Amino acid sequence: MAEELPKIILSSSDRVMSRALGDEGTPTTDAWQVSGPIPGARIVNTWQIYNNIWLALTVTEGGHYCIYRTINLQSYTLVHDHSTRIFNIFYVDDGHVVFAAEDGWWATTDTGRTWSELSLGEAPHIKAAAVIPLDGSRWALVAYGQDHKIYYCEYPGGTWEETYDASSWNGKWYPALAGCAVGVLAGVGDQLIRSDRIGMPDSWYVLQKVNGIIKSIVISNQSTTPTFLIVVEGTNGEDIDKLYWTHDMGDSLVADLNRASPVAAVQSVTPTGSSEIQTVFVVLGKRTPDGSSDLQIITEE
View 1: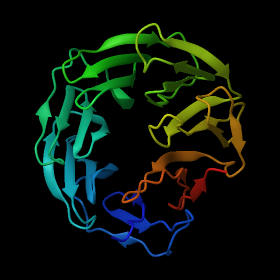
View 2 (view 1 turned 90 degrees about the vertical axis):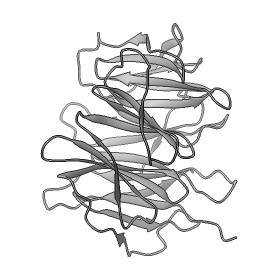
View 3 (view 1 turned 120 degrees about the vertical axis):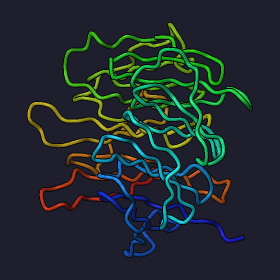
View 4 (view 1 turned 180 degrees about the horizontal axis):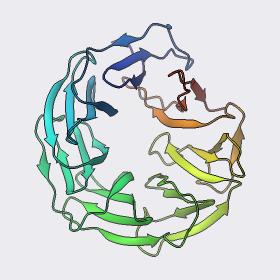
């Protein structure tokens, strides 16, 4: 069986574009495949939840958040219409994802065909979370709330509990968080904090300070030796973002020289159809006034 190449997936306001990556982490072609229009005022994001099955989240002019499902990245079928804001969708396992909304958390276990509401207690408003396997049927949810607090919940069957309060930070802040069973990293302004016990209560501590504001943290995989890419926003009027690698859970940060301008998003690329772990990140630059944005594919040195 031929090895499936990983793909870059980008979205415009109403269409999804896809392009395969070559073995060396470079595009195999400059040509993009473009889907038909997806209904809704704007596409928020896309997620692969199973082999060749993707979800697209859109928001309508009336404020509804709609989830569409595709098996070919070309045609999309509406599978869920939500009347309140959906903050983000998080991958749990093959065909199994959860989403955080203003009125609670919901899940699908059948690749997005049907959705059910979860009973996790009072749910914080979440845009960033790490889903960490505990065993074959349980996961730890570690979530960074819009209230600047970090929460922990065992799923399914658990309820949310506060584990770290970062609300004393008064400066600019982003809900940057990522992790695995080895540990979880999060940003509190210019502080990089870590939990060595999957985000559980009384496990967080300040690891080091950075020169700037931690904007996002992305993990490459959930192995025992994960690689993280950390985006740090410049301060004092600097219109740049800097990228840092860490291979030791944040103990040391190594600057990457590929970036010196604003970053809109970073995504880890996960190859499928192969047991080999490859560390590849796609970095999307901030959109310019003419509507274009810079795209960079960076690999581990």
